[in-house]
Image 1 (cartoon, rainbow over the protein chains, first blue to last red):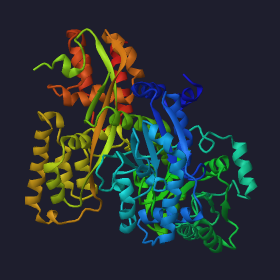
Image 2 (cartoon, rainbow over the protein chains, first blue to last red; image 1 turned 180 degrees about the vertical axis):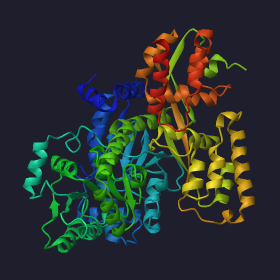
Image 3 (cartoon, rainbow over the protein chains, first blue to last red; image 1 turned 60 degrees about the vertical axis):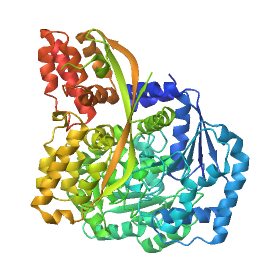
Image 4 (cartoon, rainbow over the protein chains, first blue to last red; image 1 turned 45 degrees about the vertical axis):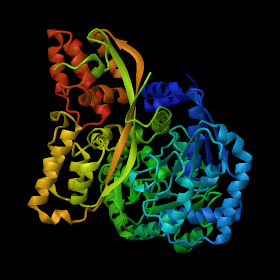
Length: 413
Length: 226
């Protein structure tokens, strides 16, 4: 066995690793390609960074392709992302033209490889048209939607649907996100990698050094939200909640830490608004971190007493999973995948308003023992359900399902 | 009636073939926002979906402390806030029914009865939708063979949750007795294992996580052979 899988066995259990090898055996040698639009930044890239080598280790020939876009393309796909999440966005014709043109150009570069693959996983809307541009495909093509598409803005979905409907299957993170499509829609929540820089155990000295670097007092209560500067993450609502708490817990500090993905042109504007709202308060730390600041994020999450993810829309909320893995109670928006992870009084609290977030923060600071108790339960919940080993198992199960027919019970060998 | 070897997936009382499985959830696209819709969809939904909402969740992300033993009962309380309906649905033991069609009829009976009792439930909107999900299960042979109860005691701690699901949960759908594969196989070893079978039967498969079920089984069989 390879050392990487041995290492996962130590975290997730050896039985989990044996299970993966047995499940993958009938698929050995098949060629799989994942395609997305960014190599760094954002949850999709982080998942693929680990999922791809793990698929290779269990014997599946797996590669990862990234489509190259221009600024107009990314503006378009950001609009699509927002539209799928329900925002009423009008995407200009010029952006649509760029979207289709970028996909045509990328198809020229990738066509031969994609058409030869046994499985192609296309992630999110950015490369969705590739299927229609590979007429001689021989494998199964699966569209993986990482976005909360439960109530999409209909014109955007109507446009995208025509690219997506011809896939052999699609994957959504939650059943609520699935749309009417003429193929099986698998439900696979995403996952975190417990051995990545962002989640691996850190020693106290490293955590202290990060706090010192950003002038955060390790002796005082700390709230942390880690996410892109994006309206759907409601960073302004977090600042409002912090201000409501400050009256009752004067020593409280807040960290809003985020980066920007290369496919997110709106981030700068939201960051400016956050900086304006936090100006003059030395206990609010707004940190714009580079995409590779994984250990810094790890340290901030570990230093936090409570982690916030007050999203008003959320695909799944991997930052929630990360925080829970570090044994932190999470106060999260009552939306999307946060509902699957945050269970009131057990792994944290779900809230709908800044006022609700403030109330739960005060409750936890008033009941310090609960912070630890909830944190422990949260970590075990992630161990059982949201580690990358479970994610890989579901990809393998899906591939078996497509490979051996769509019956409800498939007996292998 | 004793199940056949084919039904248990095992060749006979002498050798127990340890299998494993993985389950994947598939959205059906059917959603209910009130009890009447739930009833209507339940009338036509595939049996796989009923299976999933009773059992499949054990292999899916779910918080370990389950308050209700099936998704219909949980939704009756958390979605419809109807404690009466939740309690009636929660008491259903799916192994009491010959097949999933009979189980479907029982669910429909209870829902009909509740709709008759409280007319407003036919239009009252739930606070969350019920998403009908179905599942596919992929079963594979681990290659491990057990030729004695003592050997089972040795191997059980190392089994995956998928194996536990297949042999202890999924078996209830396959076996006419509604029991589990371990007990069925152990019962072929005569009187000496009857107490072990009795103790296995006392493990409630509905509320714990698969890890908890496995821990209980391991404890029982380890103590038995200690």
